Length: 144
Image 1: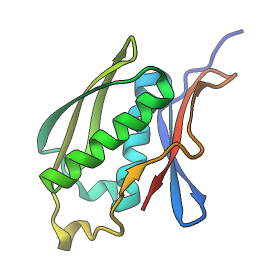
Image 2 (image 1 turned 180 degrees about the vertical axis):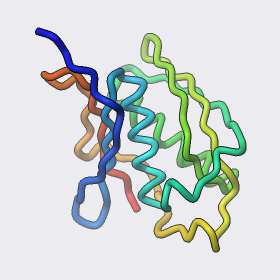
Image 3 (image 1 turned 135 degrees about the horizontal axis):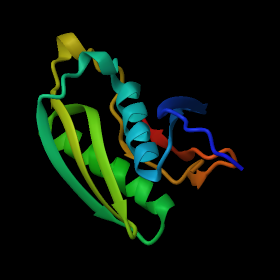
């Protein structure tokens, strides 16, 4: 069966008072990057965030689903302590260890107009898997 290459994309899905983030990509790493973009898009318009400052991020987990939650929570931590938003990600995953670079800029309340503050990534609707037609899916609900 020939797998058709699928460009990465992100989506939101509703979950009671919180919101789901979903990343789809041709690789596991790309799906994680797209999930991170979806998370930023919960807060603000991605187009308003300049990729001016690079921040390295590393995390490790016993399985890919927990790695997604750790990855998103690492980004939430960096956003909180650095008062930044991120709009570009380069992710590498090897043996359940994630190494990434996130690019963004300090929050400008007038330009970014943040809609919500994300408190954390949760295990609700957590799923990381390769779909039958080839792309990878990485999703969970974030607490807002």
